[in-house]
Length: 274
Ligand code: ADP
Ligand code: MG
Image 1 (cartoon, protein in one colour):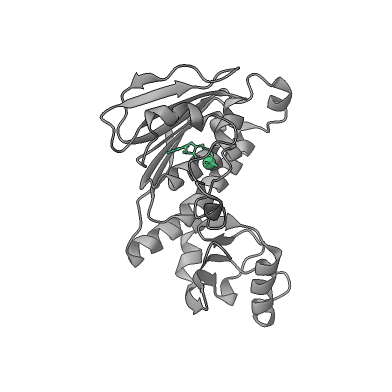
Image 2 (tube, protein in one colour):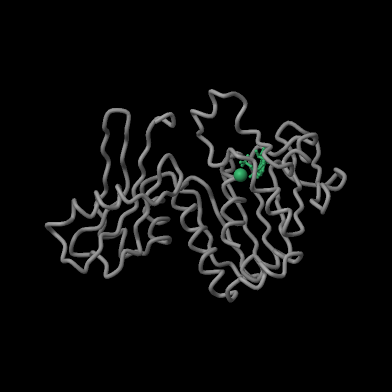
């Protein structure tokens, strides 16, 4: 479920959405519906969106070396559609009306007219209904939801300018306004990482040749007992990298006790070709 949520949210961001609404039932296993106000999909590309290895994000070989989108392999939607009941409803930004398509065994169904504001809704129902073996590997709803939540929080941290609302089993579990001013950013990071973190964090902003690094790092006195608040985003994509985490740890070495861990939210931006 967390992987499904991650892929669908990344698609919203790639489509330029500024507002995303997530609706989940049973940690996303029964239902995961994600609506965005992004660019939408033109009618004739709805079936392509469900085709394997079809992406709208790479048009030339050169694009491949300058990938600025989160997705570019065209694998997520067909993979999800093969283990669920998936419906895409979308209205392209220049189109007067919307359309929808449902994935099915042996290829997608017909494209049908459907009411939708500009943007896209992807609905995934009954994850793994056709693959009971995989369904048995799912953890409890609670555990799966913990993973889903962590995934959404990471994405929410990566794009502060996107409003995000999450319903789980009909209850609002996250409601984040888009943050543009420093005060809004402070509030949003506080909601995601805890007031304690943001209130005692050091604001960081550094430029290097072709690089910028910004974000927040904890003051040594407010280090944590676990390495559980360490986020690094490279060009807006959450990454885990031993070299980077090792560098931060080394930087803190002289000011932290052995069993304490720095907390940080860091955004590293560089030319995608690098
Ligand atoms: P990828 O993101 O790697 O291109 P996906 O399987 O995730 O592959 O999506 C396939 C295609 O469907 C995308 O390239 C895009 O054109 C379209 N698409 C999927 N989700 C959205 C969305 N929320 N808004 C607009 N287009 C979308
Ligand atoms: Mg994708």
